[in-house]
Length: 313
Ligand code: CUA
Image (cartoon, rainbow, N blue to C red; front, side, top):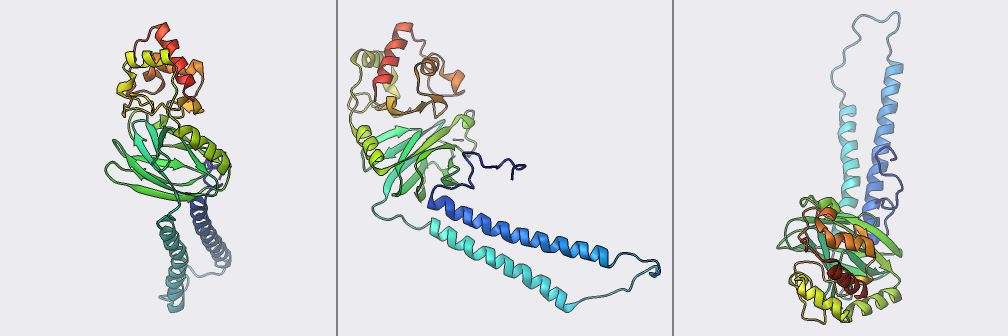
């Protein structure tokens, strides 16, 4: 496994943190053990045949010729059929289990893929955030996946397998996370220039922490007023929303509680003053092809916007 580059890193799929990931992992293990068994049997037979039927001193030039062996042929037809069945049955049952409808009290979250960032909408809780998805430990989540532009793919390796976000239709992942922590995610479908920069973080919180987080996110923003004026004057409201204010742009990430996120620019950079200033000065150098324009900000405007963003907690 080390040679295949899938050792026990923090992001390894072989250490699942949800029922969804665990079911897939169990299936892989089933297939792995069958495959290992086949390998061992085939190699043993091969070594045995090489040794038992090696050429000896008094052997004739051409060995005895044999045509057909009914029992052998029945055996090597039936054995693979039985093995395929032993793999197919758990595969089918896992597929059906993973496609089952969610319980009615599941937490609803909608993920919308954009070039190149993630929008996470909590319709029942009434807020929208970006690039960092929070879920409570132990509660089933019904994650609806769709796209605002091209096909993306939602993949948090330790949560479970990839699933596409298609424009104009919806996929779902139903999962219950069982380990508290922060888990890395990445778009897994090539979607343009900054596909590799389309990252995200999954936060699995204790239920009380999740509730505190959700209550904070649902509150309207209290923006720094000078910073907010700069925000409007610089045209930011054309693309970004700050809930509780007239700024309701829908093109870029919702910034209502931007300061409460640990990263920005699709999980690329820590949410700190220096990287943020670098991003505002030249977004394209951080995320090539990003829609966020270079606004040619004066130093005064820049520090005013930084104060606004840091204050949006
Ligand atoms: Cu989105 Cu690749």
